[in-house]
Amino acid sequence: MSRVALVTGGTRGIGAAIAKALKKEGYKVAANYGGNDEAAAKFKAETGIPVFKWDVSNYDACVEGLKKVEAEVGPIDILVNNAGITRDAMFHKMTPDHWNAVISTNLGSLFNMCRPVIEGMRARKFGRIVNISSINGQKGQMGQTNYSAAKAGEIGFTKALAQENAKVGITVNAICPGYINTEMVQAVPKDVLEKNILPQIPVGRLGEPDEIARCVVFLVADGAGFITGSTMTVNGAQYIV
Ligand code: CAA
Image (cartoon, rainbow, N blue to C red; front, side):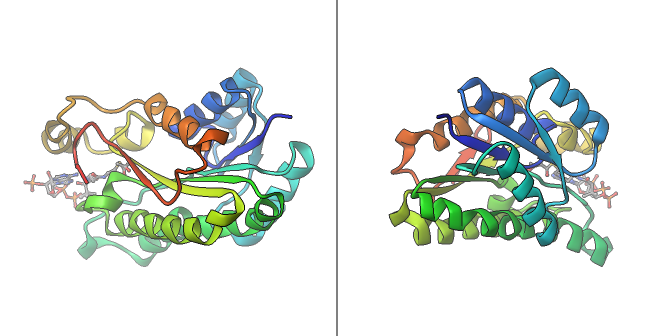
């Protein structure tokens, strides 16, 4: 029987590419989304992938949402924590709301999503968790103290959870995309993107969502059981770790 995969923020951008790629590989896929009903309905109609709406920054909402996914699709074998937001501002202009929204959505969600599924994965002695971090968690980014902190936190979380679950067939890995051609990057002011970001990418272009999706497919395979606690860097050589 095919394994069940859940992708958070899975109806747009990198998440949608991941969900589609996993479906193409034969997994049973479910996609969570947070707010954009129109995009989710379009994604569902185009892909046939069921969509489930809840806020990953809320623990109780995750518990309830995960129950629904497991009832309708099956116990979760593969969890891709992709949902994330930006609230960019220089730190001296950043508000508590900017800070809290990004920390709770991008980092808090890892606790909220992994905690309810980890016991089932441990009992079944199989699990694949992939956390979509960012180049900006590795190198820091001006205008993103909140986002850089959350994304760096995801890497630490990944390493700790990987160690705890290595003996029970569960792998936990992080992927650090660079600047990928999505709405999130398109929202960066055009002059900043063209003047400050693109010239820093030796490959000479933004990445494409499919270029991240293929990394997820690689990491979640049954044959990838020895790859755990790792951080996969996918940024066109913008920052080499
Ligand atoms: N890299 C280098 N320099 C940058 C920069 C960046 N990413 N962002 C801003 N700067 C520079 C600006 O060019 C400007 O320099 P000059 O004064 O020499 O022109 C200076 O910083 C101040 O910038 P602003 O005038 O724009 O200041 P602001 O207060 O109006 O806005 C900002 C600040 C909100 C941070 C805005 O510049 C911005 O949105 N920058 C983009 C930040 C960024 O890179 N975000 C990544 C989003 S994509 C993402 O997060 C996905 C991922 O994982 C990679």
